[in-house]
Each structure stands twice: as structure tokens, then as C-alpha cells.
Image (cartoon, rainbow, N blue to C red):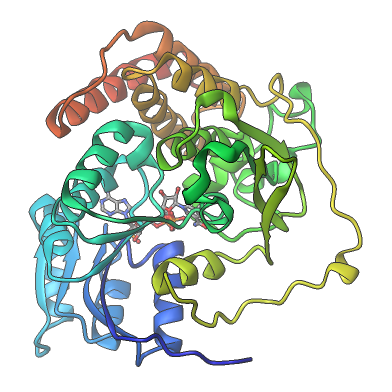
Length: 393
Ligand code: NDP
């Protein structure tokens, strides 16, 4: 394998360092120590892992979001020069610390405020947290354009599109096509899905990911969130975004042009490829992922998504078309529903029912500021939590 060091050392902060994307990011940095200086790392509650990483990567700042864990973090880092912080202010400090690149890999809408803080200071954002764009896409992209922050998509589909989208000839793009693995149940019909357990739902056939996104992949809500994400990241209309099920997860997404050409990015399903692309952009760095062997794979297959068995994708597309606060409400209700499902309180098919019931009850205008986004998000969450009782097992 050719090892390529980057042209210059980059400073980087990792929000959500202890998660699946955070750890993959640090794995790449570990293998390319000459190219990166880690400034700040954050976690929610996992103090032991956070302290271990902060020491290994000689970070300047370690932040635990859960304030109750602050003392434990301080103890774990006693004797080192690493500063500690906690809570929302701590996360903001990590985002605002002087790093040119910020990996935004907190899960859920909790990632929004810190990521926006990094956007507002004009940092380059490697964006894994799709909920930022789902909850506050217009606001997020407006702030990025004001501050000059560059957004580099990390989600494998959007990273693929970013690699093959001709930004100098936007009008020659006819559509973008997001591929969906379909998750573990893509070939099951609705009546075979109601008794699915959390353990089955988080067992993704191709990707290793955090629990929440794994459940979202199983319901196809993940693909719905990605349609909304794509709408904000790329200069296309809603009707120019298509989804196709591709169970092998080899083609990560495609762009179709007016001359009939279709350009795609392919690779093994390993998040370290899109993460490496974002970390090293506009250069490329080596990543220790399995190389693709098309002959060994043999067949690539495709199918239309089944919107009857997987209504979450339809709900997300409808929320995007409706606009206003609908995507934010969809996301908040989904986060409540997924958590309840993982705790065994809600059935798999009731995830979409709870999201729909919440969307049906709420009528909010588009939020114009971060405080409005947070307020609406809280409102939608408490409504979804109340409605949960109707569906609880
Ligand atoms: P994980 O659940 O594996 O990790 C989440 C990270 O965020 C952890 O560091 C966790 O800390 C931290 N965190 C959780 N809740 C909070 C909170 N309330 N405040 C602050 N920090 C918090 O998630 P993933 O890595 O799977 O996903 C991260 C994001 O990237 C998601 O938005 C997901 O949709 C997106 N994404 C993920 C992909 C993947 O392959 N995993 C692919 C594409 C996108 P702790 O460890 O202490 O809980």
C-alpha cells in the first residue's frame, strides 16, 4: 500500500470521539501521526475511553457532555496537561478551540449547537452528524456561507456524491441517486417486521455503526434523513433526489448528467474511506480498508425501495417537501421512537407510527434561529414522548 503524508499538518478536533465515526477517525489519525495534531476530543458519558484517547493523542482539551462525569474525567486526566470541561459550554469550547478541521460526529440533534459553533468560526467541518442538516439545514448552510466554513460530507453516500458531482457544471446534473443497503430486513414485507427485536435491528449486514443509526438503517429512516441531508448539501431540487436499494453497499451513490452519463463512487463498506477523504481533502490519504474485488463480488443488485413496509422513508420525503419545521419534528420524534424501541418499549413498526402521529399533531413554521430550533426540538420531543404511551408495549 502506498503511504502518502499530507502536504501540511492539520489541527483537528473530534466531537463524538468515543463513537463509531470518532474512533474510525482516530484510527486513521493514529496511522498518520505526522499529518494531524488533535486539539479537542469530546464524549457524552464514556469518560474512561475519552481520557484514554485524550492521553494517547496528546489533546489540549477533553470534554464530557454529562456534567455528572466531570469529576471522573478530571481524576482520569490528573497529572496530564490536558484541560477538562463538561456540559454544553464544554462542548462549545471544544468546537471553538483553534482547530482548522472539526469532525462533527456526535449522534442526534445534540450535535447541532457545537457543530454550528464550529461553523460560525469558519472552520472546515467534516460532517458526519446528519441531524444538523435535518433539523436546521437552511440555517446551517446560511451560517456556513456567511462564515466561509467549508462542509465536507462524511456520510458515505454524500461523500460519494461530493466526489463525483461536477460543481462547475451544476446545471448539467439531472439527478443524484442515493444507494440504500436496505438494512437487515430489506427483503421482508410489512407483516414479517412487527416482531423484530432491537438485537436483530442493530445487526447491519454491511456496516459497523452506532446503535441509533443502525436502527435508522433498518427502518429506512436513515435514508430519509439522507435525502434531506443531500437536499441541503448539493444544489438540487427535491425531485432530483432518488433512492435505490443496493444490498451489497459497493456503489455508495451516483450522479446522473444530462448526457446520460452516470458517475459513481465505489468501495468496500468501511467508513474509513469517506472519513479519510474528508480528513485529507483536497488531497487523499491512505486508508487501511479492504480493496474492492469486483470479480469476487460477482453481482451487484438493485431494487426500488418498498415504501409500504418501510414508511419512514416516505415520511421523511414528505417532511422535506412540506418544509418549515417538519424535518425537525420528524427527527425529534424519530429519536424518541428509536430510544423507546431500543429499550423494548416500542415495536419496530410503531417507530414510523409514532413519527407520523407526532408530525400530524404539530404545525410549526420554519425556525429562524438556533434558539428556535432548540425550542421546537424540545416541543416535538415532549409531544412524541406523550404520544408514546399510545403505542407502548
Ligand atoms: P455513536 O453512537 O457510535 O457515537 C456517538 C458519539 O456522540 C459518542 O462519542 C457519544 O459519546 C457522543 N454523544 C452521544 N450523545 C451525546 C450528547 N447528548 N452530547 C454529546 N455527545 C454525545 O454514533 P455514530 O458514530 O454511529 O454516529 C455519529 C453521527 O454520524 C450520527 O449522526 C450518525 O448519523 C452519523 N453517521 C454515522 C455513520 C457510522 O458509520 N457510524 C455513517 C454516517 C453517518 P459516548 O461514547 O460517551 O456515548
